Image 1: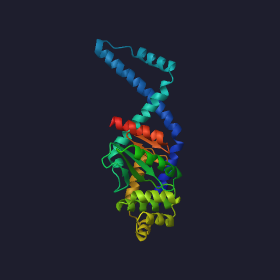
Image 2: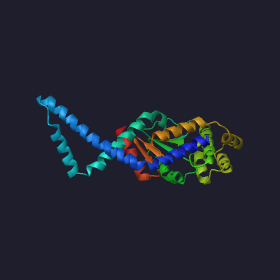
Image 3: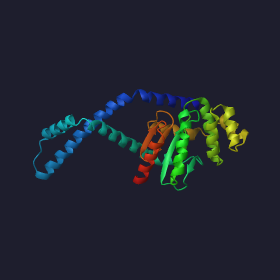
Length: 262
């Protein structure tokens, strides 16, 4: 299991090095989109008056406008990126928003679902906890679905497996808090956190050693890859994906947007 997670972690890191290439690709795609729009205008013109419109003239107008207003290019790229991300989220929404057993907090019948991919060895994930708690308190129609993404250390995998056990026993929130309070993911710390959540120590040790939970964790890794994860935490709200500890205000705005569009 860890070898698979390690390979995924390496793949996620490799994605960062490809950002510039992706930006160049997006810029090219944006340019293509502009000229495709020009083609649509041409087709409309032909249908309207029965005579072929001067495509070269239309393209010249488009080119001139871009040169006079280059500020629209970043906006076009951002819109294209947002559309691509929304498509990826839509393709996996059911998987994303369906929690593993009791690995969730908040509303039983939510209007908005925030999906949080986290690793118990991740300091940024720990730093996000107060923001998530505040969002839950302020938004009674919000549900947070937690997904284990143990890609930082081998011991993260054991902690993730005990987290799944906690979800099965209805003790996830207590274990989640105790695990982050522990400050590390060494097996003894994981078992101690499990005990604080009311989980039998022998069961916790067995979960760490066992292959149980591997498929659920691999599903999370596949989902994170599909969404372009660059590490943890990774948040999904509505049609938006956020890499890293983006803070309360960003997540609040995303929740409000998702609520309005929902």
